Length: 94
Image (cartoon, rainbow, N blue to C red):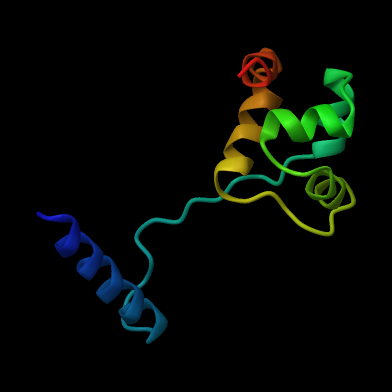
């Protein structure tokens, strides 16, 4: 199946879900990480954490204040750091 066919199939499935004709077959959810607790455990500043995560200090502040939640790859990376704090050092070294 080509990428076009896969996208077309996914889009059709999304339309059917939106119209109530089908239910989602796969839902992925990540627990929202406590960014402030993770950062405190690592003993790093917001600036150091932002640099390692490849984001801005303002984004880190928003996550810590719960004004915004990390999504996508950021949520996965935070979950990995939470489970394996040594991963942060690896991330920060690149």
